Image (cartoon, rainbow, N blue to C red; front, side):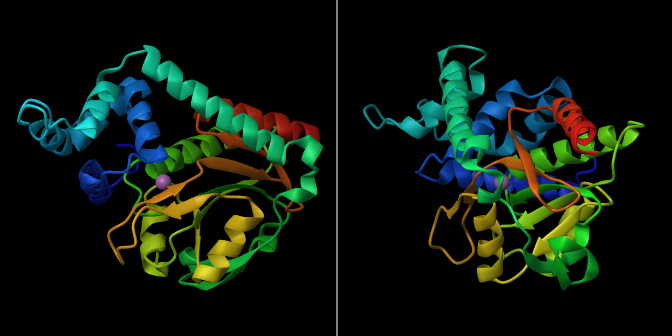
Length: 280
Ligand code: NI
C-alpha cells in the first residue's frame, strides 16, 4: 500500500465493519462502494484484502441467512454496489455526483465571485506539535487543502494518497511553483494533535496536518463551504459525512479552484500546473 501503514488499513477495515452495521446509508458509504468498484487494479486488489473480513460479515448476515420475509435492504444494496460493473447503478451514482459538483460550481464558480469562498484561518499545526498556524504562513506557495478526519475508513485515505501523488507529479514539472498539501480536520474532538501528526506522516512528508478547537475547525470549514455532519450522537463511535473536495489556493492565499473526487492524481496535477502557468 503506497505509504499507508498497516494500522490505518486495520482502521479502515474496522470502520467499514461499523459502517456495514449502520442503518443509514450515507453519501460517503455510497461513494466509497463506488470507488471500490471503479478503483485502479492495484487499489482494488489491496482494498479487497483490506475489506475482506467486513465483507464476509456483511454477506453472512445477508439474504442467504435471513429468514423468509426478513429482507435486509442495506445488505442488498451493498451487495449490488459491490458487484455492479458499469450498469445502471454506477450511472446513477455518477449522475448524482455530477449534479452535486454542478451545484457546488454554481455556489463557488466565477459568477459567485471568488471572494465568496476561501480566506485565511488559524488552527494548530500537528506537525509542529500543536504550534499556532495561520494559513497566511503559506504565503508565496500554492496550497492544496483537503478537509477530512483521521478515522475516515477509506475516502479520506484514498483522497490523501491521491493528493500526495498529485503534489509529487506537480513538483516533477520544471514549470511548477512551490505547492504544499494541507489536511484540515473536521473531527477535532477525536483528531488530537498527536493523532493528526501521526496520520499525515503516512501520506506525504510535507503534508501539513491542522486541527484545533471545535469552533476553530468549524470556522475554517465554513470559509471553504465544507459540508460535514456526524452520523451518530455517540461520543466516540461515529463517522463524519463530509464533502470530498480539494481546494487550490494561490500564492497570495486566495482560493483559485477546486477538484472533485472524480479527478485522478494525473488530471489534478495537470490542472494545477495549468493554473500555475496562468497565475504564476
Ligand atoms: Ni473522509
